[in-house]
Length: 406
Image (cartoon, rainbow, N blue to C red; front, side, top):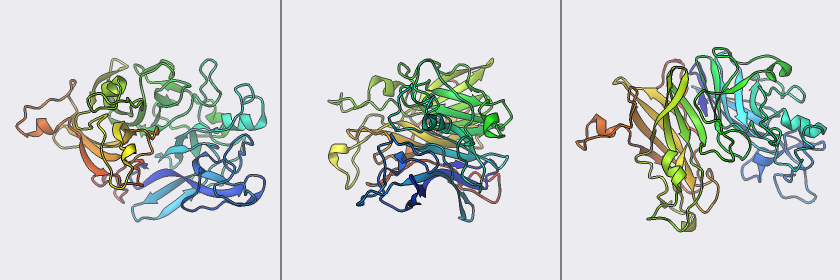
């Protein structure tokens, strides 16, 4: 979920029923459907995708779902724009640029095409060119291959084509698009700049394919399979200060060690990282964790005790400047549990303040003043059983500079 660059709307990704694969009628858009997030999109029907239908029926009725961008303005008006990217997986975030276009990130391809088949088969080529970072025109007809607006391409070594662009978080700062990758065994988990600084990518699919995607100098550049970075949401406080959510590696330690189920990696780097740009290179200053209670299980009413989750780190986030030289960051937590899915358990909406000028982790003296409040997370709301928080953004306003509501 992201506020538009003009502050007048918020955007998020969803699923909209489209014509089912094989010419079947339009798929239902309704609650309690099964595996919609792994379904094919109407224009990219992968016959190797095991998810054929979203509901039980005899005979089986094939379904397909657009990965749609929903935009909500300050008066609650909702508009939906359908797209065919991210077939077989999910769109994860969308943001409306100052140019009025939607930028998206996500992942595709839950089918069984091999590395060798992906670049040479028609459906494989469609999948490889409809994932990662995408451009979509609001209110437009859903683009179909080869005109799906994928921005840039990445392929490291012998990785599976299309999986190095398994992007999750995004922001636009100074009219520049930034994205993150933090999951999967392919590619590099890090923070990327998309295109030229100061210019948002635009153009036809062929033009967008040529847009460069580059790791920000100083951020991790080692293979995801051996890396220790799991970035998600990002927020620029200014041109030289970047906050990065790290959700942790999701590893469940069992039995718990002194009541804690997180491993050493999550305990070291999960939370919100503060990075500073020094002489053209980004350097991590410290990690904000205090109050998150990473690895400490908590109970949720009417939720199976066997699945009691613990906070694993932070996912999506946003922030704002205060009048006293501090910033306040709002984040959604990830979880660790026997569930095995960092995003499936009831999680939390949290906030933390940080002194923008600080270069070392804030510590207080225990007298309850501002210094004690800075650097300590507090929980704003905990999800109930059957709930999961996915994102946080400031509410839209007719005033583009109103950032006081969330």
